[in-house]
Length: 90
Image (cartoon, rainbow, N blue to C red; front, side):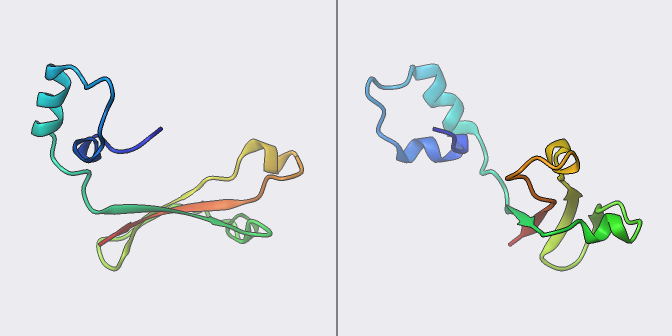
């Protein structure tokens, strides 16, 4: 299971977590206000236009965008698609 450490206080562990781990969780701040979204496309239109697929913005809900095309997609492996990963703020 993969989840942010700040959510562990809402999970009942059996056996219980060690006391030092519980103390660490109590001192951790929240994970922040970001949501990661992976957008999958039929083709890498940004690469076709000569763009990097990366963007940074100080305004709006989308703050970061990265080209996350895998090498599998570039090599034509079935089941892999071009993608952009965006980080949104609340």
